[in-house]
Amino acid sequence: MAKGDPGGTTRGRRAAPRSRKGAAGDPALVQLLTPEGERIDSATGPDGTEYRVDFTDEEYRGLYRDLVLVRKLDAEATALQRQGELGLWASLLGQEAAQVGSGRALRTQDMAFPTYREHGVLYCRGIDPIMPLGLFRGVDQGGWDPNEFKFNMYTIVIGAQTLHATGYAMGITIDGKTGTDDGEAAIAYFGDGATSQGDVNEAFVWASVFNAPLVFFCQNNQYAISEPLERQTRVPLYQRAAGFGFPGVRVDGNDVLASYAVTRTALDNARHGQGPSLIEAYTYRMGAHTTSDDPTRYRIASEVEAWQAKDPITRVRAFLEKQQIADAGFFAEVDEQARRESVHLRERVLEMPDPEPVTMFDHVYPNGSPLLDEQRAQFSRYMESFEGSAH
Image (tube, rainbow, N blue to C red):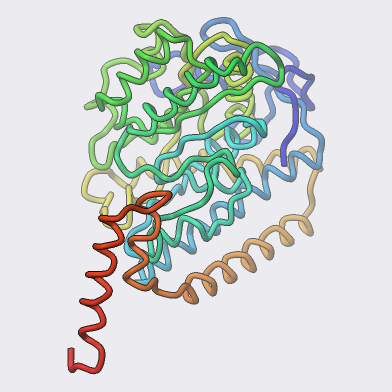
């Protein structure tokens, strides 16, 4: 687990602060690790903020382990869906660095509001990776305790979680839990397509006006299902923040170090009462939007190949090798751990029992209700009518 302070001194070999170019014609984006695995000491955001990290060798290795395990577990879930064991799956392939970097940047007291794709953030919050698979297998409602893990339930409705996060963050302020190093902050995850939703723009307004301690984390993976980014916006997404009165920054979403540094700084600013901010993690969805999607219908192979050269795991491995922080034995051990955990995940998914139909009434109200009790009784009698019959 990474615990470094983005305000500290880095282990990198390059001394001069530097920023990196994003897509052609775009403003520079924050990058601390190049696709070739070269470390950059620091990078400067559009508002002059300097970003850096200071990790131990063990923490660097921990980030690599996180990336590999998250990708392997995600791949296993995709395979399970293809074999008919899950109804649907939304893969994070290609977005591991944005999720692990931001997920590890969260402090214990911070609250995260995910979409349905934040499996990497879920992993970093210590939630059993089988939990969302129950939802996609249809045997439960994906129910973990948000308060226990400081990680809200997966949200299927596009953009709705940004409003939930805004209300929660406003509550943090009302409770007087900002203004110190131990203050609280919230983070809301969403994709580039969600920025066209009214919910997201309303959340921007409310968070800004009420100075909510909230980080909006947009994973710009270039496609809102099948719609490319240029059909969503005519300006870089992070620049939208200025119109709502709070800062925005674009980070290389395939760079786990920069994703960590930018997110930690934004969260710390929020917890100290400096209000909301928007992070645009510039990344790429390597696979389908969900397993019901066919990305070959709307994008070309050469585009995918260009982004494969920016793979988030490959660049961390190159860095570890160049700096002699890890050897072949370490990489083999991580791969074996990932294999074991994915096999174990598959076994547990296949062992999930189907729920009794009557359990659909269990969690409608915390204390039940007479009307619900009556409905449960009627449904139970209906189900019992099939016993011993040929149906």
